[in-house]
Length: 112
Image (spheres, rainbow, N blue to C red):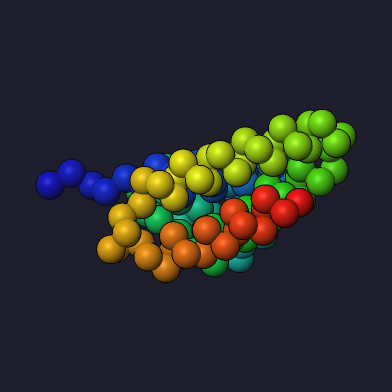
């Protein structure tokens, strides 16, 4: 049996790591999580809870807020597209709570 790989959530975690610019340890500190757990999130070995993904998206949003308007809009669109793509790959039956939480984030993101 092959291990489950959570690519869609790993993308969000890796974007948060890049946005903070402090590596996996920096994200782990901000999330108050063990760095080894964040490494597993980033590799796709473990899917974070919806709350953790929302925190990661908040860090991405904060990073984009500091950029110029055009760059900020480009990055916002990239984040929106990545999250939307990730949500579309989730299982409706197994990931209903996560899909709902991410859908709400996408709705809010479109308003900005």
